[in-house]
Image 1 (cartoon, rainbow, N blue to C red):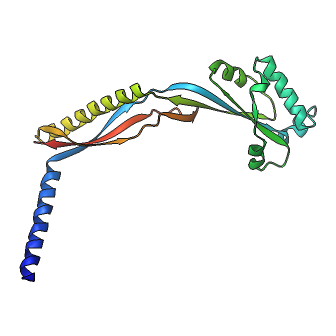
Image 2: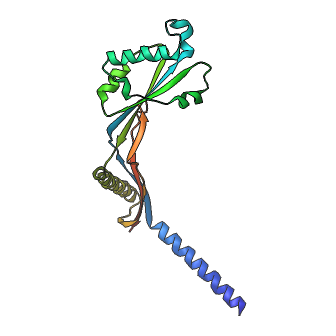
Image 3: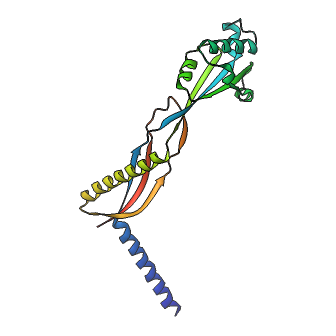
Length: 202
């Protein structure tokens, strides 16, 4: 009785494997892509004031307070209010410099203000820029539709090459596109929303 049971179990296993192979042989899996076009909504500037560079290059700045005063005057000259800057002393300490210094951060929705800030060139002051870019719900829906169209085009091309006809969608896997991301300006790569689609073949 046990032998019959084992034989039936093995036959059942072989049948399932055969069915799986048949299903797999009658499907095509492809990716679909759509170019993401984001809108910049927020700018961030991280401003480091570092006395390490000043002891020989600018003897007029004898302390960090001197450097701050000098930089703030430059900001006002270019039409940027120093009161908009948020000081983050602990961030500078984490850098491990030997001399005094501090870090300020400016967040603004004004591209013009960032352009003004970028014009200020001072020894002992370095600035890093980032921008926040977003997509809304309407754009996400548009990206998904475009990616589905692209996936179908890719699947049709494969079916044509192997003399098959394209059937219905069996499964879709979406690689989530983030609603908002922060990037540095030098990261000028193209971003794509990608889905993976499995179609039946006839």
